[in-house]
Length: 224
Image (tube, rainbow, N blue to C red; front, top):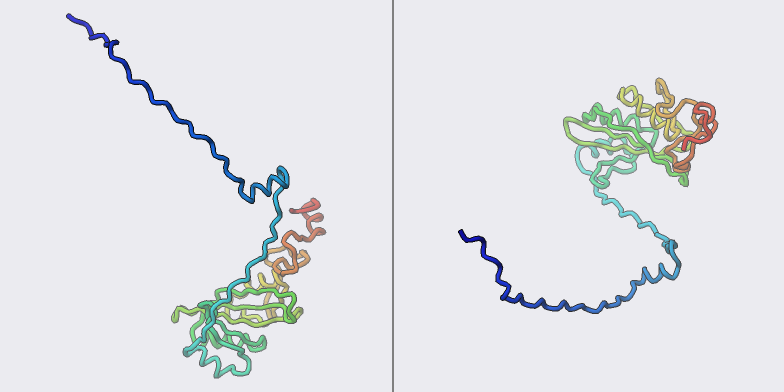
């Protein structure tokens, strides 16, 4: 039996082609890197960013039986009925707000109170926008009723129309300090009863807190 054939050393392996080394090109430093090197290690240039102006929401006239009926019945108290950013909005005076809410519920089927909320504008004479959001299951529509409220002025409660307004109005009072007339139990709902200040006002700092309450109840100097 013959063993495996030994390799033939007579055949020469072809020489390897030399690898060409390309010279490194020195790339010019970008302006940002060059400026960073000039400033020194660890120092970054401070850029002052100017906030962009928010785009204005598109406004269109709100046409239909609901705005027509509101205009006929509350002509003196309604400022405008528009579609703002795709949302149907009624802007009215504070005095007739509960009458408008009752009319929308009884005559047009807006039988669900989605929310009661507010916005604080401290530089304005009437500092608060108070908003009721109503929904009609039969029409599948939402309507927002907005009024302005001055500092220390009480808004009418709609608890007699919607029982869900109880906690919603308490939250607005707790966060903004707006009081509601004829509310059955107007007190704080999120913050402790003894808390000083209203956290969702624009002049209430994001890190602000009631230091006395924190020291007395949490036994620490700061809750931050």
